[in-house]
Length: 489
Ligand SMILES: N[C@@H](CCOP(=O)(O)O)C(=O)O
Image 1 (tube, rainbow, N blue to C red):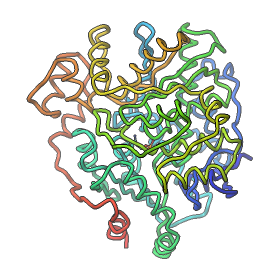
Image 2 (cartoon, helix red, strand yellow):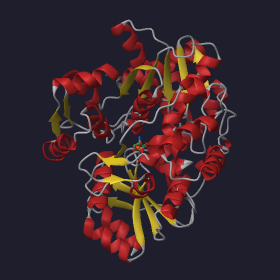
Image 3 (cartoon, rainbow, N blue to C red):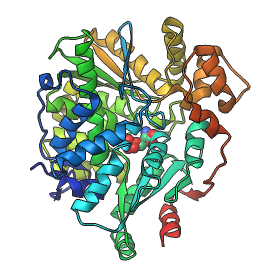
Image 4 (cartoon, protein in one colour):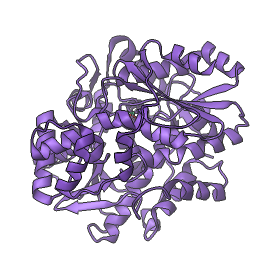
């Protein structure tokens, strides 16, 4: 029976408890005490949903197998492509399109199923309080979580986003969200402030007792919740199998994955896949100008003491990548004292350093680099000019870092780039990258981008642009708890 350990102490939890809590009471993140194994050959010929079942059932053994299968089929029916996460190949660029879910970002893959996992976990844990999902977002998680949890019985959701730190379309997607149980609040601050605020609320014992007394328990829709992370492992296996089936690689050939990275959840899911048996050679971690991780891979020092830079890939505008804590726990051989000290140093000094041994173990698995704004725009244009294929700025960051990786290392292993969002979420940046400056705004450019490139247009996006804003609240990043109190108590 697989259990979950906190990264910061000897607290353990069953899967349902870990999912329901979202984060451990000591501030640590839950990680599996072991990596379940999958024989990759056994997945040959299986559909996305079947692979999903193989992965999830190994991590979440408390759920009834039939119920788990039902949850999976209810979750992925709403994707607008036959294959949940199709691969698009141009030369040696293989883009894994993770954005065909309801909100046009990779977050849909996990957030379509998380509400099911959470409500099933509440049943197992015999909890009938209302589950309040606290979410911090730099643009994509927020909308996907709202969509997933809107009107889900027994839950309510509060999303905090940086008032001046998301794209126009990302903002509109959130502020127009309907649902009886949804709350969207802009904060005066950046994503790190939002995430810190949410984590502080989780660790505030007295506040959690007060909520409990009033019939509420907190959980998370961010990738700090293991229930968010595990479903993201699935597309690593699925894309590998698709690559074998299309003859691009042979079974058991090594592959690289390039992952545009912010909170380190998506790439960590790849590390979990590798430890489960997927033959991954390197995980290529692509950052934007907020290049803390790139510096870490070079020096072994994680140092967030630097300006927070707003970029055209806002979902990755993050200096504290939460899931890096999980990686430290794994590579230090489950040393929770070391992780706790590192995390304490990060919050008091803004930095920590790891030993050469830990740095080297990380470098065996990961390569890090970053792409600045100029190169992001250039890459969008180059890919379009060469292949007529439109990519969003986050994917462009991945693409450029992949090119740099090949040049620097000479490694030509088959590589898959995770394409994390639809170009339409960043219409103006993408349009201008390809066609040059425009006076028009994102809303107007949506149709122009579609007409000029032939990129198929999600109709709901047009309707959204003229919808009324339902959420207009703005709060100070130090007043997030007060906002929740106002909503709930
Ligand atoms: N890039 C994210 C930031 C939060 O990441 P998560 O994976 O922890 O949810 C976003 O778009 O909100």
